[in-house]
Image 1 (cartoon, rainbow, N blue to C red):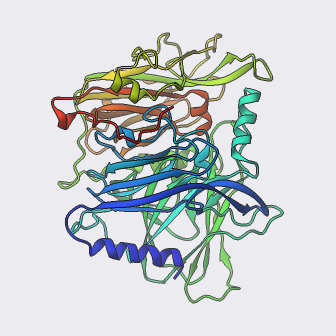
Image 2 (image 1 turned 60 degrees about the vertical axis):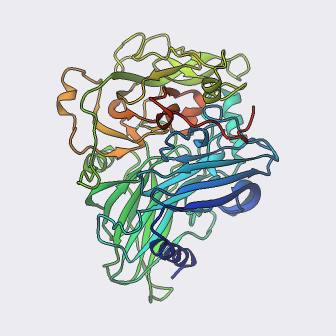
Length: 555
């Protein structure tokens, strides 16, 4: 048994024998730099507690988690607890200049939140610039004491964090892209738990999953990649999907998992094949001409007791443009929708919104070509403030930081998946859309063919939502809602919108504060494919955002 698996098993034992009452879990995160060797080359990277990937945060449903983050590097830092509902605790959500100013060099900030009604796997990552390339880790939320998994109990559990690796300094990669006005360089490799495995001209070690014949393993798979949606496969083995984004699903079997950046998937693996070594592979998905890292990261599933020279069974990875594989996987996802875990899908809608998202070109006097590629929702390229975070400006009524005129629909409708309009320039702005407390919201996320059509993994902070429908082409507001799944749609915090297609999501705005919505491809977030919802307070203190903590960083 590997050290990591043994550690996870011991942690699970402690949690399953702990007291019944929710507990307060304390963690200390020290952000520093460490020299790491990958692809036969070394470089300094940002890490938490000297680990890459960073430490796993363990808790139980309804526990309170307190994490003190200390910044020991000469860069601003924030941490986002991706998928955590943050009920009334938006100050601890983490996106820089949205809910907090970043933690400056030598300073610290204490994140304090409760894991209300959530169980499964999530992730944490840096939420400023491209630091999440190396500053990331898993969040494991065990069910309440005495509550069983709604699937056969696994014998063991294992965490697999998928990522990307650049040989160059990640900030230099970002700066190069910003200076050119074009897309930054793609990564040099993918990684499994921080390791790419053998690569051209380098026989570096890969990740190994040790299994025992006849045992069942719960794989907690986290996509912490910066810019790529990924396929995940294990040669010769089927996987049973039981949870995504910390929400239980109806179980189904597959040999290929599709997982976007920011998404998590829990899958049961039965070690029921002939004793041997089997290849684990992750590879990118991209169904357009946009550049990706085409390297396949590999690891090994190794049955205990085999000799080192035993042959490895390989697996064919899906083609880079395997859209049917992504469609099959996403269409198979359904909420468990049981008495204990109901799917509370909003049936009536107070706010019916449509966000067309695409790529534009704006003038840029400082860029090498005099122009820069930008991204937008409804023709608005979002600009982060610098003098105060939006949540601070809202709470303290500071003017001049944001406006409340984000358009509910595209201001100039056109054929979104047909010939794009001649003028591709967008409007810069820090605009939010206001929602009444407890109102119901439907957002149709409409992809476009502007310059670079591609799949967009869209993440909403502060809420889970139900993905009630999806399709290719332009959304038809008359016909398409007839096929919406309002019974057991998958519940997520991040959803992939198909290339030149659409996805409809629904949620209830029951969490007051400022909540970020953005593409989880970091390059698109950098270009401005983001916006924010302002959710009003409800009635009384229990429906209002808590006061800010005393140590909230200042800009």
